[in-house]
Amino acid sequence: MPQIIDGKAISTQIKDELKSRVEALKAQGVSVCLAVIQVGSDPASSVYVGNKKKACAYVGIKSLAYELPEETTQEELLALVRELNGRKEVNGILVQLPLPAHIDEDAVIRAIDPAKDVDGFHPQSVGALCIGQPGFVSCTPAGIIQLLKRSGIEIAGRECVVIGRSNIVGKPMALLLLQENGTVTVAHSKTRHLKEVARRADILVVAVGKPKMITREYVKEGAVVIDVGIHRSAENKLCGDVDYDDVAPLCSAITPVPGGVGPMTIAMLMNNCVEAAAAR
Ligand code: GUN
Image (cartoon, rainbow, N blue to C red):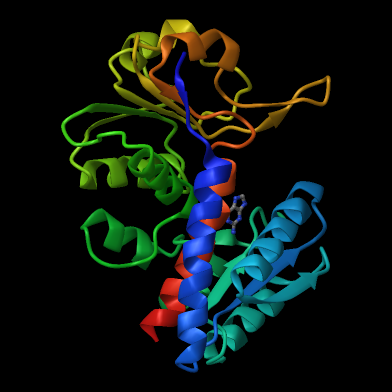
């Protein structure tokens, strides 16, 4: 049977390490504070935002919650971001996505001070990642690197296939695996012979957004499979992009859903907040 990569346990370990760092910073008179902005009341976003606030409380980070109505204008949102940019006690600014359709997401992300861009979505942060310079890294792919490292999985020299090319997961994931000296292929919805491409992978990262799409035909025997997806089935059960029961017997290691990648995203957000405060 494969090694089950326990994202819950690893994320708790990281948050406990951060708790000590937050205490040490406090002893030096530095407090850590994250501003979380949600526009509208999308139920999934509300759950994510709630989890982020809970994690802040656990780690000892102060969180400021801005729950703005759906009708908030772009100018109003930009004005809030600029105000938070200017507030010294705020170390991190997170604008929960997606934003309502009348707001230009890119314009809002660009307005965040890169020094407070704890999501790692600002073009300056993405550019820095691309050329291997310091900056904030998108939390989900950063969390996946931690899962691999803390599970003793070697990346250097191995075939890594990322399925998905989003700005938040696929692209930064590919860059991080490359930084770790993996041999990286990025596959996507237009990739020909996707099964064959996926079967090259020693490490397969799946972020396609389709429930249980990845079956055993996509997986080489002994591969490590990382599932970024999270979906709720008709029977109200959570599942990922990977058909876990079909794929797990074939793998050397696999992340479960829930309890794999999900908890890591928030742990890395907490890490970025602490880094932001420490850098001041
Ligand atoms: N919406 C879904 N995932 C994320 C995330 O990681 N950050 C933000 N800001 N919004 C999201």
